[in-house]
Amino acid sequence: MAETVISIQNLDKTYDNGFTALDKVNLEINKGEIFALLGPNGAGKTTLIGSICGIVSPTGGHISVFGHDTIKEYKQTRARIGLVPQELTVDSFETVWNTVTFSRGLFGKKDNPAHIEDVLKRLSLFDKKDTQVRKLSGGMKRRVLIAKALAHEPDILFLDEPTAGVDVELRKSMWAQVRKLQETGVTIILTTHYLEEAEEMADRIGFISKGNLFMTEEKTSLMKKLGKKELVLELYNPLDCTPSSLDGFNLKLANDGYQIIYTYDPAMQDNGVVSLLDQLRGLGIKCKDFNTRQSSLEEIFIELVGQE
Ligand SMILES: Nc1ncnc2c1ncn2[C@@H]1O[C@H](COP(=O)(O)OP(=O)(O)OP(=O)(O)O)[C@@H](O)[C@H]1O
Ligand SMILES: [Mg+2]
Image (cartoon, rainbow, N blue to C red; front, side):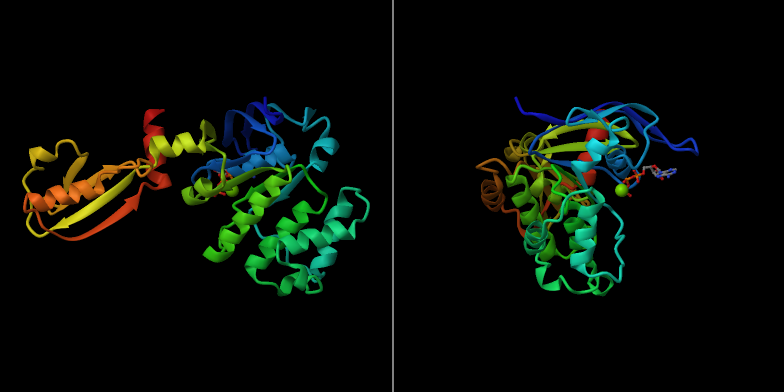
C-alpha cells in the first residue's frame, strides 16, 4: 500500500463574504505521486492548496499532512511543504542566491549552500545567482519561486499554475524538472487549466468545479475513457446522410453535409482512420481537406459534469 501523505476529509471553505469556494472535499494523496488538479477559473484550486498549506483557514473538515493536523500542528506540516504560488510574488532587489537562501532560513533550517547550489543548477538559474531578482524575465522569476519553494527540502511540493505565461520550450523543461523531483521522492500537486499539462505530468487527475472535487482518476484510465480524437473531412460535394456501408464507423455529418466528423480513440492500435479514408475513396466520396483535433479539457469537463 502506498503511504498517504495528505488526507483531506469533508473540507469546506466559505469566505467571509459568504461565498462557498470548497464544498465537502475529500482527497488522499500518496507519497511520490504527481497529482494534477484540473478546473476552470474560480473552481477552488488555489483555495484548496491554500488550505493544505495553512494559508487559507477552512470553515469545516479536517486536513492532515504526514499524520499531523494542519491547524493544530501547523509548524510540523508547513515545514514539509513547499509552495509555488500562482502569482509572481518576487520583485526583489536581492540576488537570486540571497532570496533562495532566505527562504530556507524561514523554516529554521541550517544553512546548506550545497543544497541551494544544487537547486539553482537544476532550475538552470545558477548562472543568475548574483542577479537581482527584479532584473529577471518572467519565466526566470517563476523558476526562482520554484527554487524558493525547494530551499528547505520539502517532501511535498505544490505548484499552482506553474507554467502559466511560460513559453512552450520552458514549459517542457519545467515538466522534466518536476519529473526529476518526483524521482527523488517528492510528492507533487499541481494545478493547471491545460489538459496537455495534466496528461504529460500527472499520475492521477482530480477534477474540481464550483468547489466540488467531483472525480479523481488515474490518468491512464482517464485518457482511455475520455481522450477522444476527431477527424474532420471537408468534402467537395455534400452528403445527405452517411453511407450505410460506413455504419461501423462513428460518423457525424456537419456543415450542411460538407463535413464528415469521425470520432475515434487515439489509444487504439488500429484507430480506423486509414480504412475510413480507403472506403471513402472506394465510394467515390472526395475530400478536399482534413484536420484532426483532440477533445479539449473543456469538452471532457462538459461530459463529466453532464454525467454528474
Ligand atoms: N479572499 C476571498 N474572498 C472571497 N472570495 C474568494 C476569496 N478568494 C477566492 N475567492 C473566491 O473563491 C472561488 C475560488 O477561487 P480560487 O482562487 O480558489 O479559484 P481557482 O480554481 O484557483 O481559479 P483560477 O484558475 O482562476 O486560479 C472564486 O470564486 C473566488 O472568487
Ligand atoms: Mg488559482
